[in-house]
Image 1 (cartoon, one colour):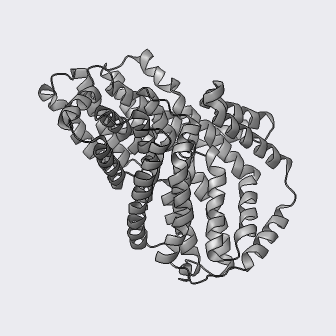
Image 2 (cartoon, helix red, strand yellow):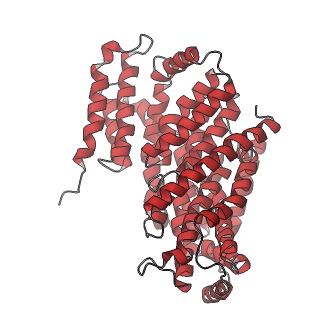
Image 3 (cartoon, rainbow, N blue to C red):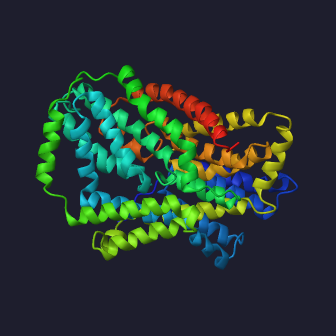
Length: 472
């Protein structure tokens, strides 16, 4: 039996790709024929990531075959695409995230927070936010955090308080907790460069363009806007979208019961905690002691295998990780080809530099952040959006005289907060919207308001904070 293929999804990518090929004679003089053809295939691939004729890995393999088949890149150099460290960092961190779920450590941490802070609904929201925050530094799969660890807790709590989608009582407490978790996930994703795949992608693309962002450097820049958001967002949502149940005295009793059912902390959980802390410390110190962040991720995975927390079968069945290695490696490789001499990016950089000459670097940066943020309404993948737009926007900022480290981190954080736009913006949005606790109209309206809040906090207050610590 043949697998289902969305052939209609190929229409727009083919129209755009073929159209650009036909316009080759009209290309700018500084772009080579090969550079223009690479641009045509890359843009068609990004469009296909949106129209989804196949999953993104399938689309990327078709693009990969095409650029080699047309002679734009030879086979041996093309294989170097899979030597890029960024996709492998993400893949190994997926293994760490899987171990959190497998050992039950993620759930135990969640229950401990619920027991400690869950007497009121607002306190419960902060407890669930802290769960996401604590686990986030070593889990770039933010879908695993929200959908695999926090959502099951929310569903159990909602059921305990009689708040169910099935009987129309979701607004008692479930709707508020689900929507709050989505934004807690957005905020935690912005705080650590290892907290979401788009962040790691941005760091890799920045490095490809000569900007090295350290783990601690990202945290130092993001900590003020992230903490402000972490404190205020649950309250803002509470005011906009108030739950009908304000007191949750049964939450502690429920969490106690669940922890008792789990029993004493297992050896696998202790090992998982030790590996998590070790990886976190080494990521923090990596820029000071000369360790490679990707090696740290591999080391953590190896320790989990050696200790039996993770099995080889677990590792091989983590399809999300291998999916990232395939499609992200190919897209990064193609994006890097566009930056070579005779490619589109150098021409774009020169052209925009001539247009924005004399414009204030601060104004240019503000415009770029707004364009980057609101263009996410067109994307259903944060990582695909980052791959498509991060490097060009970074180069534009550099051309306008924006301090390059400031631009790199500000755009990186924007790549985390733009997931707050829609119910299809990223994996966590899809996972949390799917159960039906929050109506689509409510989701969009409240996300629009919170999007403005994030732009002010991250772009305004965060920008001033980064000036204070010397990033511009």
